[in-house]
Image 1 (cartoon, rainbow, N blue to C red):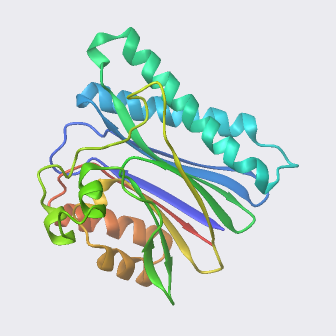
Image 2 (cartoon, helix red, strand yellow; image 1 turned 90 degrees about the horizontal axis):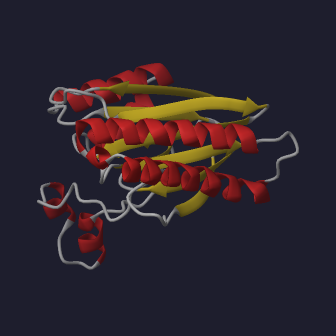
Amino acid sequence: MKIVGKTDIGLHRDSNQDAFRIMALGPGAGFAVVCDGMGGENGGERASSIAKKAITQAMEESFSEDLTEEKIKPILLRALYSANSNIYRIASEHPELSGMGTTAVLTFLFRQKAFCATVGDSRIYLFSKDAGLCQLSKDHSRVQDLLDRGEITPEEAKNHSDRNKLTRAVGINESLEIDFFDAELLSGERLLLCSDGLTSCVEDEEIGEILSQYSLEEAAETLIHRANDRGGYDNITVVIVEG
């Protein structure tokens, strides 16, 4: 299993409020997380950094050599709950950080499977040469709710005025609702974790084409360059895992 991650400030931001971490934990085991902060320049960058640190610490402390698949979901949930409580507490103690939060897409890689937990509108995709690109995560956003109810079309969603409004984020409330799923990661297949700085500029079809044509390092670089070529309106972060 191979993994690469890259982040870029984009063309219109003064700071990078995205954060990511990739780490091996043991033979055939590791994790990756991508966070996209919100709450102003200081708050967003602080929130994603707090989340990355809390999740990393929780994952390291929870891993053991006798780990079984049944224990993985509680580990992921514990990591995100820790991030949520840390961000919420710090925001409560510092009024200037009130309202800060972050998206989080977290995957634990274990025995050719990806166990995933998600909050917000950062995404996880699975790419295979046979099936192409498939979005595994669901956006927790106002626009996704409108799509689910059939009130707008996918084309209308792309430029909707509420496209940046989240319905879930880490650190905004004391409680946190988390999506959890798992997927096989077969040899040659690729898992993509990314912030919306990529998906707001580059269409899924083009993302799939890039993942199919380039090595891991080249694919990560090309995805970021393509997002910047299309405007680079936000910070851009990609993590790619190859089975």
